[in-house]
Image 1 (tube, rainbow, N blue to C red):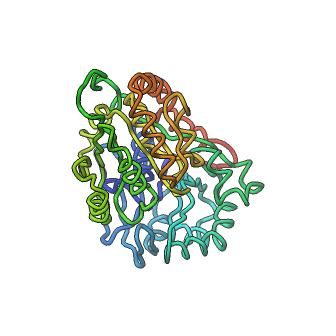
Image 2: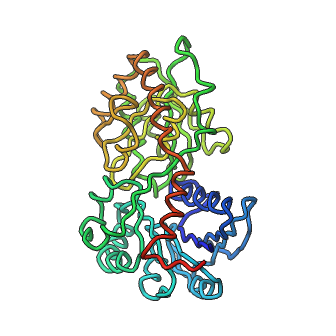
Image 3: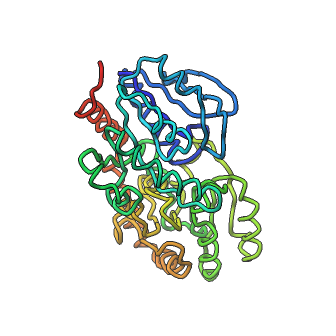
Length: 378
C-alpha cells in the first residue's frame, strides 16, 4: 500500500502528535508499505530517512504557528498514486483545504488528537474551524481514530456522535518497552533527594502542560527532600525560570533543556516520581506518562478525559484535579512521604505499561486500512 500521512508536526519537532506520526510511519515502512509524510515548512524539501519513509516538507503560502495553507499539497497529491491518506488533526489550514477539495476517490482516515482550547487569535481560528469545517471533515472521513473513547465523548467530536460512531476506531498509542524500562533504577536506600521529573515543551503552544501549577505545588513542600528536573525547551522557558526565582525554588529545579533521544530513558529510570499536571483538554492522552510507567516510575497526572485512562489510579499513580495547586500538592506529598508505596506503584506501573505496544497499534491501523468502507486499492 501507498500511505500518506498529513501532519502539522514531525520530528525533529518534539510533541506528542509528531511522535505518534513518526512511530506509525516507521512501523508501517518496516512492514513493506510505501510511506510518505507531508508537513509544512518555510522551504520545500523531500528526503527519505533511514527507515525508508519519504518526508515532504512543502512550502506554506500562508503559515501561522504549526498551521498553514499550501497549494502545492494538491498538485503533489494528484501526481502520486495513493491508497489512503491519513490526516493527523487538528491541522488548521490543510484540513480546511481537504474539506473544500479533497479527491473523492481517495480514502481518508483521520486521527483526532485533541480539542484546541488555546487563547486569543488561535482560539478564534479554532472556533471558526470547529463550527464551519469540522462537521464536513468528519462526514468526509472514512474512519475517525481516537486514542481513547473517554476523551472522544467529552470532546468536540461528541455533538457529531451519530455521524461518526459507526466509523470510530479506538486505537491507544504505544510505548517502546525496550527503550523505556526500569533496569537502571536507583535503589530505595538512596540518600539522595527524591527526583521528580517533568517532560514537556516549554513554548506558547504548550501552555496547557501545567508547569506553573507544579512549581507552586512544590513551593509548599519545602520540608521534603526533592529535586525537580524539567526536560524540554521553548520560548516560555525564561518565564518559568523567573517563576522559580519568585518562588525561591531555583536551587531545587534543573532545566535540562532538550535532551538527546537516547538520553531520555535514563532520565525516566532515575526518577522517583513523574508528574503530568496538564490544565485542560488540550492534553488528550499523555505519552510521557506511559514512558514513565514503562520505566517503573509512579506517576501523578491530571484527572482529564483521556489522560486518566493512561494510568491505573491508586495502583500505578494518582489523579490530581486539573489546575488545582492544592490537589496537586496533596498528591505530591502522598508519594513524597511514602517510599514503600512508590516502590509498589513502580512495579505495578511497568506491568500496566506492558499492555501498550506500537506493534499492536500498527496492527490495528493496518486492519482498519483494509476494512470497509475503505475501498483501498492494492
